Length: 317
Length: 295
Image (cartoon, rainbow over the protein chains, first blue to last red):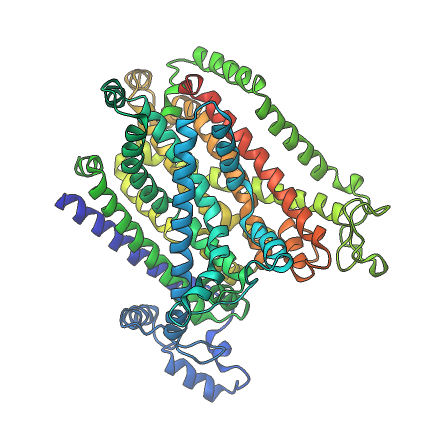
């Protein structure tokens, strides 16, 4: 276990360093002189030189990279070109929205996905399985941002069931907060629910034909106990695995969902930064996302090896 | 791996009969046939859009703006600028398929050789696996955002971003197939007979990994089509006025209450297209899976 842990930590560290280099190099590959962009209207050589000095742009790449890393490690991600606000505070205010949205989406997707998956496995060959399979296929094929548009058009605007856009912080009004987030979370969770459903169904089918289940049934245990016990134990592994695998899709989906529902989250920050060519923000956003992805993936893997001991053995082999 | 077991022919003859069995299974599956028919129809519309579309996709007719579906000359209605929704969907399908095929082709060209190398040569495996992890650390949209910032937003760059995002999946599939095939007797026999690495990879491993690659590509195309729609919707993909299903939706969002059809129709088109691809992909996977007949 310890060896697996160290190995996994080492892999994550290497990936993180490589990701930082990619982000740094990527920003340097941007067209145009950053000093010119930073200077804005004021473009006389004197102030350009001052800006280059201030941002260390006159230093060698190695020095610049070191400064970038050491500043980032201290939480200093620079300032927005557009607003002059520290990028760090922009991210700190946007991140909770995205995290809440994603966690809600995962919860909704798990409940729907595991429920439908168990039903599909238990009711094999009946209309319930057919319906669950069809729903999963639809969930995988429908463009989520379009589903979001339709939901706003028909559920929010026409029926007035949900607010069409906007956000209320959880701590100022929890009920309004959930009311604003439930529809976006549902939309974001559809694809995830479809993947969880399919995986739950197939692992349940495998399990239901396993010898120990037949033994349990032969002993006369009621089907509800057999399925319930098994479903609960297995579904946890399935959900953790899928969330790990679908994390990238979830982050991408959150960006679009926030855009549609005008949520002031990380995704909106990202898209706005691209359109405003706000390079320090783009750089920070990409770096934070990559770091978050690597760290969450590490946590998922570790959690996974706690839930399912077989992984540990494989990792050590 | 269930898929893997289906394609374990030790010499070319079973490979051929395998292929026949797969085709037979697909032809006997009404759902798969429906999916194929929808795909064929979509490709037909896209390829011949120049002749089939009733109007120029970018032609604005302000006096015809917001015509509802069923209006004479505008079967699916018009948008805020009086552009014909049906014509724009046809050309949008062309853009979607273009990006889908381009992106998957890109992931094949890069991913298949890297997967073969990673699976065959253990020394390079670690390096390629680390690079795969690195690409995975940038979620597709973040990758596309970065690429759009560096190279500008366009159809080609959208396809590259989507293709890059699909490379890790392709590498993993090809790598695991290579690992499995490498351990089989017929490969060992070829090596004993003095076959070189390139010969073994190209002549023995690649053909037998083919079905797994085809399934992965079939799954990749609808994902790429959805990706293109998302990017164009955000303004990071195909640039207006060129018609794309994603930009149509982005435009329609502005006047969705006034002309809901302009928001509904392009989404339905994307959904039917990806649904058809997913159904065909699923059927293909099941047809290649010997366990599928039991289920």
